[in-house]
Length: 70
Image (cartoon, rainbow, N blue to C red; front, top):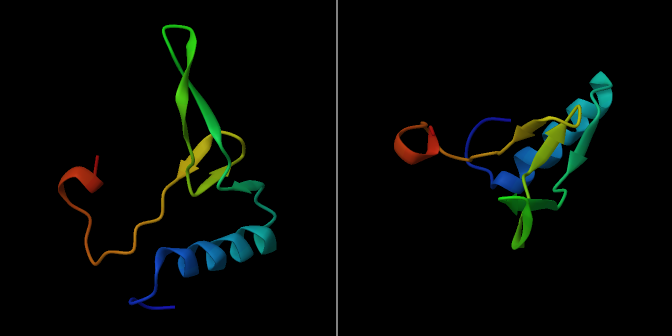
């Protein structure tokens, strides 16, 4: 697809590719967060989760560095 699109465009394309390849995924699921055994009021919503354990965060940038690399 090349560069220049918003993250949502790349996400939709990746979802289609995962479906074609038979890769199980969930799109933008809401995940509860616990701290010391107690749920927080805040939740986490990754872009995709594959195989119920691989978190994918899509970034639409020309290079990864600094905080985004972490």
